[in-house]
Length: 89
Length: 490
Image 1 (cartoon, each protein chain N blue to C red):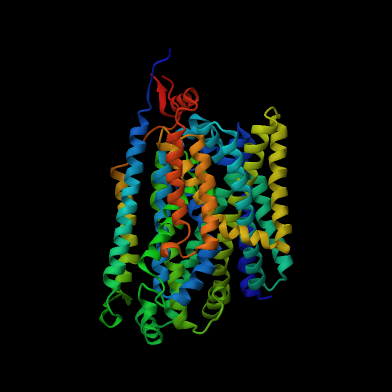
Image 2 (image 1 turned 90 degrees about the vertical axis):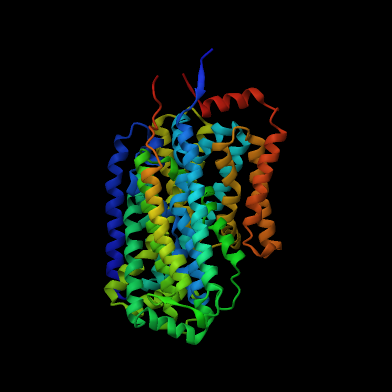
């Protein structure tokens, strides 16, 4: 009977999938809290950044750039290189 | 014909031929025809992977329909559309390395290959093939009609000849070049989409006298336009958030997207693609929808949402520049259609014919069959698009959400949960699609969310419950699957 062990690469894969869920949660949080936190005020009290209402600027412009940077950092520092081809052992 | 606009478009369509034909040179050398034709030899680098995912996902609605709604609804709709940024990284992160490893272990070339190996069930594969063929044929046809209409309005041709030109320009390179041609042209198309977005956004801001000026005009017309709640206040936070399922995380379940997560070369390609994908998706979605809102200050009073972007482009830009911008939606349509065409063809040839009808076919025969099936499907779509039947339009409405509800859990749980089995997968697919159609028809406002949300949760519960109830039915088979998928020899 052949000895079998759990594919060690799956540890990495599972961890990275969870990180993916984490980024999505952070993304949602930034998007939601700026949009409805700042955007629920009466329009007369809106502040404007680069001409855009601040809720929109933070949620959709800055939030989008933040997420891109977060993805970049996560991929660079938390994701690891694993070989995909079947290793002959 | 407006030659100023038509010439850039003609150059664009011709250059597609060039890139498509260029890609075919790989096809001749590929050792494994099906893997090369349907998956580009599993050899995509980061840029190609990112661009083919973005371009396949971005369709006519990102460039025409969506901005048209934003024109009427205001910034709230841009907020909603920004839920799509998540698609740039989420699919790759979730399916990620596991999908890449498993599809190599099992030599899977299509999504159905994966499902077949994972669930060892003829019925799962057949049901999934039916979903893919029916839903994707309908959505392909809808995009095809959109492509024809766009060419018709931009170039002043009749709908029929526009449709023919569109068909020829898509069909030839897809049929000859397969997945690699699709990925390479998608990269070019994605760039065009991005450049077009930037040009029209900048042009609109200039035409409107700067962003502050535009905002002032919008506020004067209706202050709700610059709130997150929509011009009529109808966009509740819950409703807008529910789009995170439909056009955000649920996109993992779209077969045309999921299959791309099998196609990359190595970890590095996936990492790069996540960054580029997020940036490009976000830039296109933000740019196009924001342009739609700004257009209201520049060209007020447009009645039909779908005509906002074409009218805006032709009004504010010089015609040669307009030609480049108008190439963007056509690029979006072509890059979606080419992916769907290949997927439908792979379902018929590989998943149905080779698996269940004739698994002894010679390579030469398979090659000829694949090319002819792809061509025939393309021609069929062209024929039905000339006068689209109501059934097709109806099916297309359900295609996006229906595919998500059908596939999301069989894919994700199949990858990450050892106890998931064929019964769970089948039940979840049927429940997902069925409940989606019922809810959409009968209770479209269920709980104030998009109708896809409840089916996605329901199909999850059913997958888990049915899998648990049937876990002792085929213990040996399940054990073999687990060993194959999760274990390696010491």
